[in-house]
Amino acid sequence: MANPQHTRDRILDAAESLFFHEGITTTGVDRVAARAGVAIVTLYKHFGSKDNLLREVLSRRLLAWTRHWDDAVAAAGSPQERLLAVFDAIETFRASSGPTQWCCFLATASERPAPEAGTSDPVFELLRQDTALVTERLAELAREARCQDPAAVASSLLLLYNGVLSSLLRGAPSDPIAHARGTARLLIGSGAGATAPVQP
Image 1 (cartoon, rainbow, N blue to C red):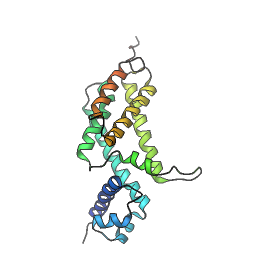
Image 2 (cartoon, rainbow, N blue to C red):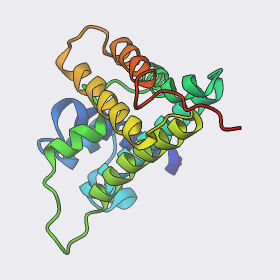
Image 3 (cartoon, rainbow, N blue to C red):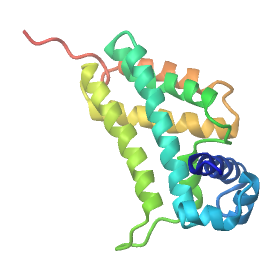
Image 4 (cartoon, one colour):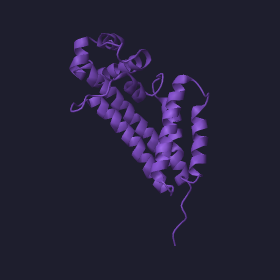
């Protein structure tokens, strides 16, 4: 008898690969089921709809990314390095996760129209959750690093973070993570990001 969790994981793996190599809109659930080696009825039994499947793929991806960022922050040796750990996390996450063209969340946002006012979209809610997670955590780490304007630093690092993910799709510059980390170091040492003096 097939293990339901193994079946679920196979479907998620197939969906992630197809959605983020060939496109979400162009990939039907029949292709996902065929890649996973299951019947379409089995796919629907586990996920109910394509939107639910996409949301579960993104949710799994977000959980894995958060673990990598947690590990990178824990391994950093100073408050400033903990703030920069987001770039270390991108490296380790990409090295360990399944290959995709670029960020799964940005790819989803680029393909999916925003929900109309007064309507809800569970996939878009997860996109907002990802953005909030990155923004709020960067601001928290900037405060711990005693940056004079944590919100401004967080916004600038979010811009660099998004730039890295987009550059991985473009293919230039050749090492966007190193470029972004260097720029972030300069930012942290600048007026907005400079460490505030310790109060007596």
